[in-house]
Amino acid sequence: QVQLVESGGGSVQAGGSLRLSCAAAGDTYSINFVCWFRQAPGKERGWFAAIYTESCSTTYYTDYVKGRFTISQDNAKNTVYLQMNSLKPEDTAMYYCAAKYGTTGWVFPGRYNYWGQGTQVTVSS
Image 1 (spheres, rainbow, N blue to C red):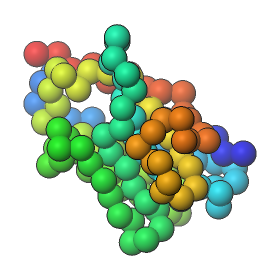
Image 2 (image 1 turned 180 degrees about the horizontal axis):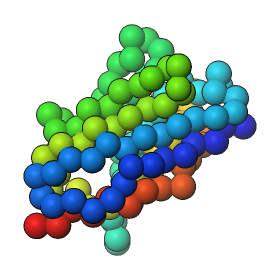
Image 3 (image 1 turned 180 degrees about the vertical axis):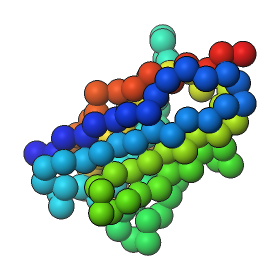
């Protein structure tokens, strides 16, 4: 089993920055792909940033966050970070990290074995 704990959410004004953390504990050898999803009220949960923690730490971003958000990892701490800059009110959502082994179906929330509890990000205009 793997436990994921997110932290770092909060409220900021548009243009501000936040850094989210996703710390993994337990059988961390059983995961090598971490994805950040977000869900706004009334909308589906969707991915926006991901990292393959093996394979030279390949990263993935949706066009909407590319250039504003950066995903990274600290293997010594079993933690994945999400640096979010130039935040917009449209970024307001509950943010979740999720983890799995391998890349098959990684864009689909149902493919993930492990989820964090979520952290709220609110961006005011």
